Each structure stands twice: as structure tokens, then as C-alpha cells.
Length: 95
Image 1 (cartoon, one colour):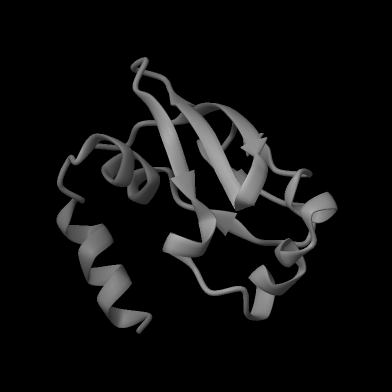
Image 2: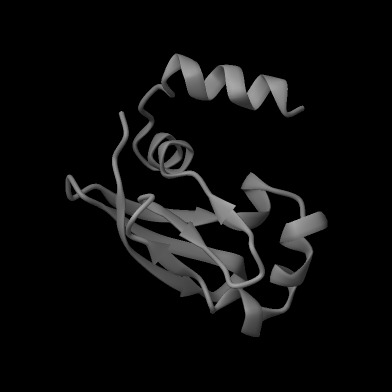
């Protein structure tokens, strides 16, 4: 899959509008993806949440606090595409 994120817009209620290099776009709700714990805890603050940016080198999104989200996972969430095998294995090993 490996679709880079090219644009991100923070929205109300901890949602993000994302656009990918192939033109796919959609909205995801951060609370549906990750708990507000650890590196994601500062994102509870809407002001911190709005500091989201695209890391063009990695094709993902990140915050100055060090939190980041993988483009493949977000692409799958928005388009319904299957995650690559290596991503599924990594997700299972981090649980």
C-alpha cells in the first residue's frame, strides 16, 4: 500500500481530515484509533492537537510532542483497503 499522506487538517472533536498522494481523502477520529495515554496524552488539549503536521519524509502525520500515526493504518481506515502483512504483524506485536 504505502500511500503517503500529503495534507492534514485538524477538525473539531479530535478529528483529522487527511489527503493521500493518490487523491484518497477522508476524516478519522483520533479517539477511535488510539487512547489518550503516553505519547498521545498531550493531544487531549485541542491546542496541542491542532499542531498536527505532515512529515513529508515519512508520509505520516506527527505532532511536536513526538506522537505520530502511520499512513498505512490511516489509509486503510479511510479507504477500507487491507493493511499489508508487515503492518498487521507489527500491530500484533505491539499489543
